[in-house]
Every structure is written in C-alpha cells, then in structure tokens.
Image (cartoon, rainbow, N blue to C red):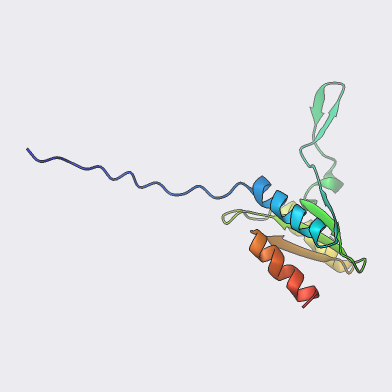
Length: 119
C-alpha cells in the first residue's frame, strides 16, 4: 500500500487594510505630513450604533496635509480591495475641488506617491 500525500495548498490571505493603514500613517507623519485616520464605522449615541450620514459615506481612510499645505485624501485597500460607489463619488468631489486623491495598497506605493511630489 502506498502512502498518500495530501497537498494543503492554501491561498495566502491578503494583508488586512488596517495594517497597511498604520504603516502609511506612520510613514506620512515621519515625512512631515499631518495625517489622520478617519473612523467610519458609525456613531454611538446612547448606546446605539447609528450609521453615518450620507454625506460622510465614502470618506477616505486617511486625510492628510503635506508639508506644502496641500490636501490629500488617501483610500487604503489591500491587493483585492475595490472602491465602493460612495468612495468613487468622494474621489470625484475631492478632485473637482483641486485636492489630491489616491488609492494605496502598500507602504511601497505610499513611498512612490511621495516621490512624485518630492523627487
């Protein structure tokens, strides 16, 4: 009787976005930016969780101001994450007003993004 080997091929889970966010936040702050994590899980009022008002849906994960005073909205996604319709609408609103909007999927992409502004 021959021994059977079972292949336990598992796909690696993508890095959770919260870990990518933390890396990017630290990097931006160390680079002289003001960077804030936007908490978009809803509001707690009298012990009840209320959903966000419609005008707050889609707000980027990180709102930042670079050392030259420019506004940046940064949406963080892992390698499989996709923008929602609300996030695309927020992107359009930011860009229409002259702000910068970017979707970043890693610390490496954040480094490259900054290189575009400060070569």
